[in-house]
Image (cartoon, rainbow, N blue to C red; front, side):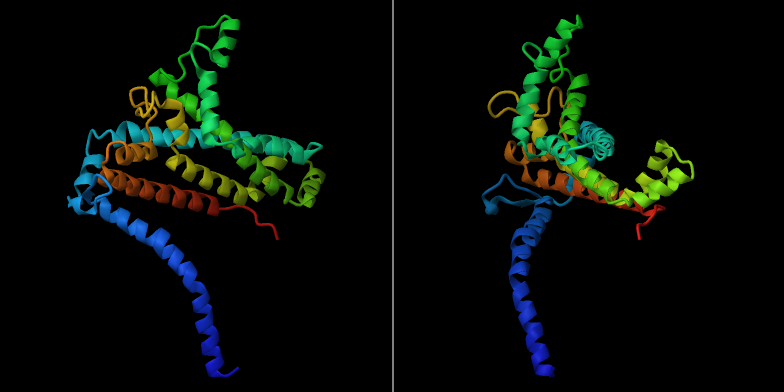
Length: 304
């Protein structure tokens, strides 16, 4: 192959990559750069001539002592993300471990995956109806048992835990799908050797299953936490009162970072503050992801 032909092939390869580069430039780099610029400005949206440079003012406001973005919004965000991931991961791990040992495994996987293909709006409205104090199914069952009614979504102490339970339940299906696939990929020879050495079921799970399942566990935890930290649709659906009302109640008890960004931008017209919050949240998500990667990189067993 001569030098001219080689150069032509390289040129052709770059020409094929041009559409991809353009796509990322238009729909990824430019929006992120513009959002970063907006985080140092005041802007109510739409009219670019009204953008006002304010420097670090937005960051100082949202990170200042006593800022509602730190307490309770970021605290609610961590509670929502870690709580929902804990529920969904533990449940998915147990369910995946069980259904891989049952007949009709694919049917069980499909059954648990169904909530994942249901829209969040539908899930939120159904559970909001079930949580209702006056006509909800859960309170009706409590009344049948002679127990007092619980104001699940109108009491600041119970509102966020109630939504965390729903988010955890809705996320079980994806975890079951990934973890069951990881379990099926573990060779039986490891378990057979362990049984010969006298290992019981718990020891097999602790010393064989969990180490070999680390890549699947890492994927489930990282994607679950990222989704949880930036999720707000379920809370928006379950806590919005009235048409065009503000979500995150009662008393800001269920307000999370992504929901606050959405409301600051689209309800209150404070795009600068909203984008500043988004970059603070990005840094938090990035740091948590790095910590997870470092934790799961230590130790473990590799399948050869």
